[in-house]
Length: 124
Length: 124
DNA sequence: CCGTATCCATAAGGATACTG
DNA sequence: CAGTATCCTTATGGATACGG
Picture (tube, helix red, strand yellow):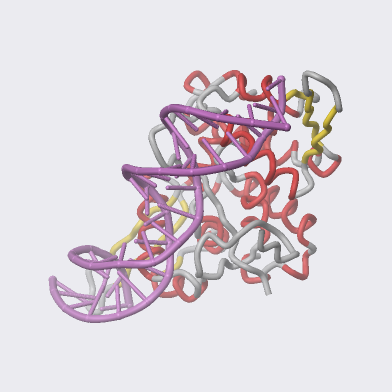
């Protein structure tokens, strides 16, 4: 509700962050379910329920909240088809697609850290 | 000036994460002050107080907690010199140094997203 | 100098029920 | 189908004071 313009949503608390560029990136992709959502969207458009099925541990509420933030940050588009039954699709914007190398380097490091077999292939 | 930036990365409650590799990476570097700390350590060892001065918005308590987690995850070493007055230095491990490309790609994306001038040059 | 200990406000986020 | 609305718990992390 309190959109101050520049970067992100709401201050978590009072202390000022440093505002460094890495924190900016984290503020966009660092949400609890955002990396997984983004990875799946790298493969193309997805409907809301399809997305939910791909993040089975997140509630619909959580998926919605994360999607809204991603949308606000300009990395995904929300496309509403005025049909019955309703259909809504999510897709990456160009900015969102530009996250691919970042996500991949994070995935690679994480895989090395944890051992590839322990990680979820769905997240690909 | 910039507002604080919410960064959530670690499991807050009980729900299972996906366990995907990106989340693993986020669980290591995603802490509130960790990226800044890691960036400064890329330039070499630092004493506790020096580190605190470089993250002026974080309390000593927060810096300590973040350092302990980084240590537990094996990305930094804590070196205690048994002197009076006490001296403690922190340095990256090899694993920590292997984060450099990840941090850099995140920094680059964040800089592009926010505009370089808005970001903190201290954070490199 | 390098931290801990304690207290406490708050916001993240889970569960569940409901709706256009 | 694609979400909201509501309630409620608990982890996060800020402030402050103290200690080896």
